[in-house]
Amino acid sequence: MGRNIAGVVVGYLVMFVVVMATFTGVFFVLGADRAFRAGSFEVTGLWIFVSTILSLAAAILGGLVAMRIGKGPRAAHLLAIVVVVLGVILAIPTLDAPEPGEPRTGDVTSSEAMMKAQQPPVVSFLNPVIGAVGVLLATRLRKPS
Image (cartoon, rainbow, N blue to C red; front, top):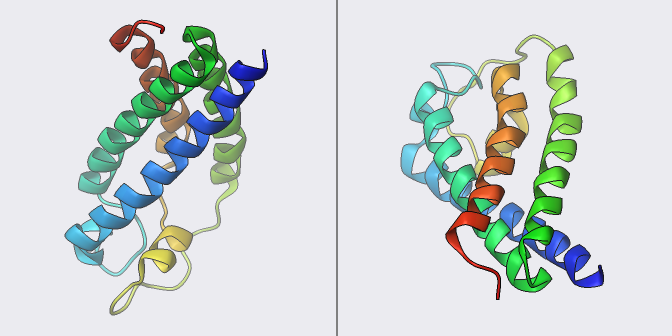
């Protein structure tokens, strides 16, 4: 069981690092004007599409790592559960999100973009599902060692 728990923890950390790195890179490539709607911190459809693909890829990688450490698919199954539970918990506050605050003006740093980005609540609730699907896809891509 210890290997499975380690697989879940390391798999989740891998997902986190990959998402942070790729999202930062994509933000620099797209720039604030293509990542956000004009004058706001509301994300564009392009950002939602790209971030969904990157999240799925990060989840697959996290699932592969979890399986490697856990020596089988059980670690990936547990990781998928953790992704859904934590994702839903983190998505719940988006239901009460305040109306957009200050308008976006000028250049935006990647850390400011992460803190102020506003995505539709439905996207916040779909992200954990996409993550779990990616983790479970990993069990189909690689046979346990």
